[in-house]
Structures are given as structure tokens and as C-alpha cells.
Length: 467
Image 1 (spheres, rainbow, N blue to C red):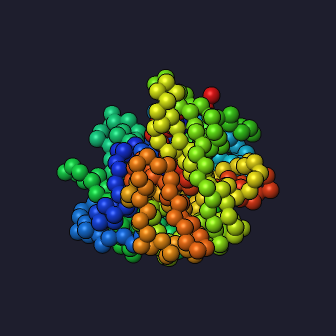
Image 2 (cartoon, one colour):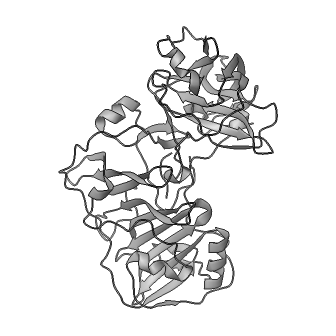
């Protein structure tokens, strides 16, 4: 389903979020689990990694969106492309053999689970996205509770998120209002161990809150099972609490041409190569044309090759470096600004690049920090490097303490500033807002790192297209 962190295509359950800008410090003090920043024309959420504040809502009565009671009545399974809630019918049925082939290939498919001829649940599966979600249906055929899981590298299926909607009446449309009444996200470490459960709830009397809790204090009377075996195509009923004998309805032996839902993916790169190419022109929907200008920013020495990126005031010896390292050495740094053609005025710094290899970049991906795992990310989400002073810094992990007391501010409209010690450097680049910066890793044809790009996520470029 759609989550935080680029998309013009929504998932089966779009979830809109208010464009709130909060500093990391504010987020921690308020107990908020994630901070939303306006990005790519949508809202993107970054995941801070600091310890959370104590739960200030421990006694708060949460809205309840429970799963239906289990049943051992016979279950009919319909393999298909998805569910049409308006028509209350499966979309593009397929045979079990086709669904099994889709499952083995990591491709999309869905199953509708019927009891007594009535659809009780829909399961959406796409192993290429490590994703499976059980959706429970109400009497109107609307999905009202989703239990999403991720398949981890050990082949086990682990709980990721639970979301629930409370509809005002029979006439309310599916996902009316978009935002779920409750949303519980399981936060894990790199080895899949559970660390916390984040809680978001819309309160019956108005308002909402976010906090985090221990796994043992799951915010519902019944906790969904975690760490389960991956079911076969005809075995999903058990995870929906349907334990009766199962039969599979026959269907066409062909893969549907279209699917009515989109599997979730972490935030994907968008025009990163163009953003870091001098002279690129971006056309904004309002008719303006923005051009990219490269500003050489000298070189940075990385004696360990382990790069830190983030707010210079927050970087210290305990900060996690990027997981992919560069060979120890000295590398060119460039700052990229965008300016309006008709005025010639520079607007914002849009990106900063560290070039590791003098070879073309053939692919881009999120540059994860040590300890991050993409299976922790929902749709459109990214791991952010917290920024509290609208300033970004790059420095080698082994040299960050050498700049602990340094003045990292820039003066005037200078696009960058370099601080140097005897063996390393810190490159400081002013941005446009607090929140979080995203780092892209560019790989060359042989898969080795070619460059690191700090994406400042300039709003004017959110919907702009090169050309």
C-alpha cells in the first residue's frame, strides 16, 4: 500500500499525509515515530534511528478495528489479479497453476477467500517486493483491515504493518478519507529482531497521536502472528483465520494483462543523472524552465572510505556511515544548483555529488546506512539522514570528531564550505529546509560504487521533467 516516503500511482489503499515539516529534535521530544517532509510532489517519510521517547499515551483508549472471528467453515479460494470492491468480485481470475507460476517468479497475484459464497478476505502477493498483505472485507465488500508482511532473506514471513479503517456507514466508499483510523508499524533491526511498534491513531473525539510501544504491549487485544512460514498459493486462508477445508476454483490459464493494485516499493530514484548533469533543463508544470548549474566544490579526503552524511551538528563518532564504502582516497565534490532561465536567478541547491569512479553510472539506488534494511521501508519511504539546521555535511567516519568544535556555518550565498584537518575534510552545503536528506548510490556497469549524491529534494523539481 502507499506509504510515506514518490508516487503518482497509488497503491490499493492510498494514504495521504499532511505536508508537515518538523525537525528531528521536535520529533523526538514529541514521541513522533516518523517525520513527514514534502517531497516529489507527495509526502515522503524518513525513519529516524534514535531511541524513542516514552509513550505519553500509555493509557489512551485506541480505536479498535479488529479482524473477524476465526471460522472452520469450508473455504473457496479464487486466484485472480485483485479485488473490485465496488462490484464485490475478483478481478481477472486465473488458474491455480498460473498463480503458482506467478508466486515462483516473484510476480503479482491475489487470492480471494470465500466462506459460504461470501468474500471474507483478499490476499495480495508480490515476492519481488517481498510483500504479502491480507485484507479483511466488511459486509459491503470494502477492505477495512490490512495485515502486511515482508519476506526476509531467511525465507520467513514477518509482520510489517497493520492498518484499519472505520467507515461511517454503508454508503461510505472504500478507504474513505484515505487515512486509516489505526496504523501499527513493527520496527525491526537489521537481523529482523523486533525493536518497537509505532502507533498512529485517529481519536474518536477528534485529533490524533503517534507514539511507540514495546512488542509485548501490542495495542490490540489480539496480536497478529509474527515470523511464520510462507504459505502455498492455496494456503493463505489460515493467516486470515479461516481454518476449514479448502478448495480452489478453476480459472483461465493466462496471466492477467493488468492488476488493480500496485505492490509497495521504497522511494525510487527520479532523474538523478539529469539532476547532476550541468546544463540539464527541467520543465515545471507551471511553465517555468529550471536549469542545472554545476559548481565544483573541491575534493574530499576519505581515509577509511566510510562516508557520513547529515547535519554537521548531529554527526559524531556514533553516527552510522553509509553501508557501501568507497576505496580510501581523495574524491571530487560538486554542488548542483537550479536557476530560472527567465530571471537568471539561482534558486536552490539541488544536489551534492561525490564522484568515486570516473565511469558512467548505470543504476541508482538508496544509499543505506549501516544497520538499515530496505524491508523496513514502506511504499515511497526512505531512510533519512536527519537535518536540523538546513545544512548538510559530508565527512569520513574516522575524521568526524576532528570537526566536533568547528564552526560549520556558511556565509552569504556561498554554495559550500570545506573544513580541513591534517588528514581529512568536511564539506558543508547549505540546503533549503530542515527534515532529512536522502543519499543515492550510483553504481557503474560492474556494480561497483560510482558516486554518492545528496538529494536535497527541491520542491520545484518534484513534478518537473527534463527536456
